[in-house]
Image 1: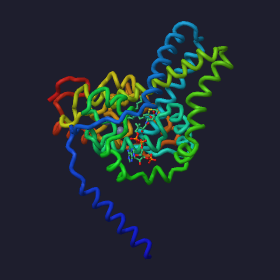
Image 2: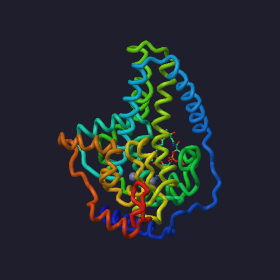
Image 3: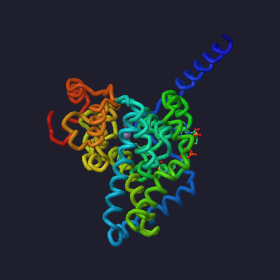
Image 4: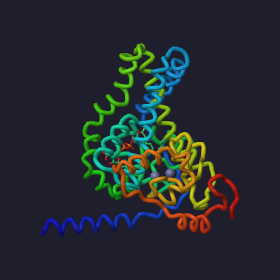
Length: 329
Ligand code: ST9
Ligand code: ZN
Ligand code: ZN
């Protein structure tokens, strides 16, 4: 009894702390001094050089089996981010039965974008405080910062301060995600780097040099595809649903990022499992993936915004274009 009342007091105190924070209005970026993380600068620097060399090897000596193999891993990894970390775990836009959760967690591990736990925490904060200093990849700081620069410096204090109040209880009580967090280093090391290097050596006769550098190439292609959602889709494109926010509809990003570039729509209706309005699903391969598992019965409770809701929002706060940039209002 005593314990529960002290917990209540703490929760109350926590709520008050959050209410007392200064209101951040996007776009906002206060002057700041960056604390560069040298280790990340080195790993990203090495990774990009290795990926370029991997591209050269892919075009000259690699077998077509290795290229196809990596294209498959690339696709699985991307969908592990889009259908898994993003639509399922961050936004709870649909529910998934245990076998699908395990598949998605494995696919997500191929992508190595930290653990899902860290990914979700940052992404929930990104939606709550978009394009302000509490957004981990604040696009108000420009293309480079929102694309990759934010991973090369310590996070802004606002991120750490406000991040404490993000509700992560669903994630911490998920055994599949806790498993990934607990065994992150050996699991990511094996699935993202070791197996994709060893399999082409063993089955397709690649040398270690070729196999390793193509693995790095594939990994960095995955990363940059995702990063474009934070940079290009926050800076360039139309705003059919809300003209007052930075996230934009960017068709090129949608093509590259498996349907995740309809970002103006996504920030207005983040709980829609399609992250796009009806009609855009032709470019939305993540939605096909979820639809397939819904047909199988492993994905369910798919949430969508009704056409009426979408249309009324479009008329009320949009920029007068439809998603293809055609004037409609
Ligand atoms: C990678 C990036 O992993 C992956 C993110 C991708 C971006 C996703 C964007 C999504 C777009 C949406 C659509 C999907 C699109 C999909 C497209 C597909 C085609 N809340 O982080 P630390 C606190 S790159 C609350 O180290 P530093 C907390 O106490 C891959 N608290 O901050 C934490 O301790 P703990 C490789 C927070 O020291 C402590 O601070 N990965 C929050 O400032 C320290 O946290 C890398 O290279 C928060 N949000 O360092 C790693 N954040 O965790 C890159 C922090 O114990 N990252 N705290 O609770 C790092 O090295 C570091 O994070 C850092 C900052 C240097 C960037
Ligand atoms: Zn965004
Ligand atoms: Zn999102």
